[in-house]
Image (cartoon, rainbow, N blue to C red; front, side, top):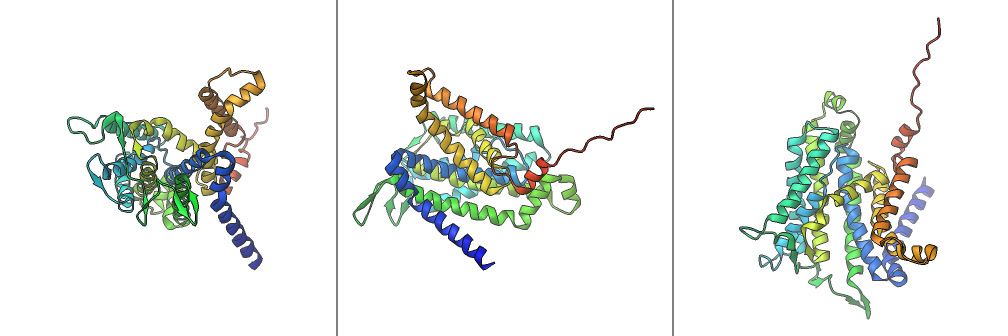
Length: 361
């Protein structure tokens, strides 16, 4: 037992050291643009973990999850930019964004409690599009969101009155802004992972799983399915609102184009690809689907030149083609995801019962 604990502790220390030095290794080897990709990957991990509560734990198919991301981003932009002349600190806006996103999660969940499957997916998809269109047109008669032009000059996150948007000089070593945001996003992503693990092992987490497996049986066992479902929507939206605020601070610009339907589909793919309901699998799916498309984008031109001597397909089109083929292959050969939950893996591996054969005569 002590040996297992030591091995686990040693593994955590090694992972911590690797995560600490990762931006420096990536920056030296591939450039700071790839550190920026890592920053976005951590944001997507937070989004995927939030959606995993709704889809993976509670079994509620949500295609409008990106709306909570937009709510958090625009709330941060409105309260920390010259648009209204308000400049609140990030540490006041992020919790507020989480609460407002949770309120919108309850607002979405309350009318759809009786819906399931495809009907729930259609309603949540409509909710996501309504939020995006609402933001896109809320520039007249009173200009609140600045419409399609978006909001710029957003204040960055400040720690001890030091903005993370500028390089930080530490003992003569200049640490670029993308490195600083990497450590901030990593810290908050680890906090989201910790909360997700605690939720999964809690009474509420078991109630979510019971509803996912059989809602009627869960209700018969005394679970308040109404409130438990609303809590799933609210908790998932909370993570989305935090990630949205961080996105606005990091980009220093937000516009409705960043919160389209494809973003919702991408986050859902992260959950399904990694393994619904399995936190390590969802993290893996989030990292892969955030990094793989960028790797395909950068490698499309060299691959075509090496194979054909010239560029035949636009890198963006080839990127999406290869990305789609990779998803199809995974769904064919790993239907439970790349890193599924052990119980889910056993269920898919179990052969389906055959009907009894009827004798003649």
